[in-house]
Length: 134
Image 1: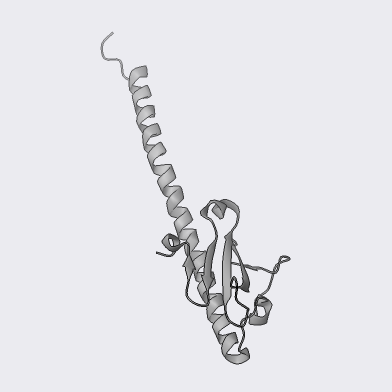
Image 2: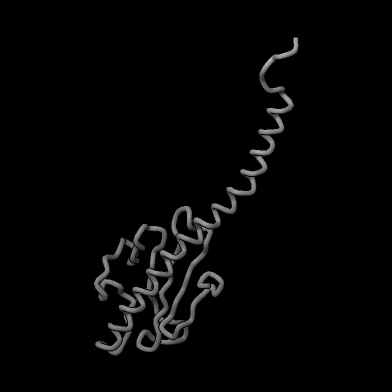
């Protein structure tokens, strides 16, 4: 019966295997790209809040660990939510220093972003982790 049209089972299996291999390569790369793009939201929030901290310092001669002093609305944990809610930002005195000397802002990732880890920025310009800021 020559002239039959269609695909053989082997051809279909090969196509499915190729699609599976391509998906196994592209999906993790895409997920990493999404995490990196959301990270920019956390970095932007930290830079904006630090700018407000510096303005506050010029007027009060101290930093603040209460971000409502800067005009932000806090959630129940005294943290500021980033624009799309992927990070919660908090402020505290730098380790072994007082709040009048140094403030550190921490952006804690939330939800699907949680695997990314915390981002920090202090008033002395130290950023961690350094590879996340590049």
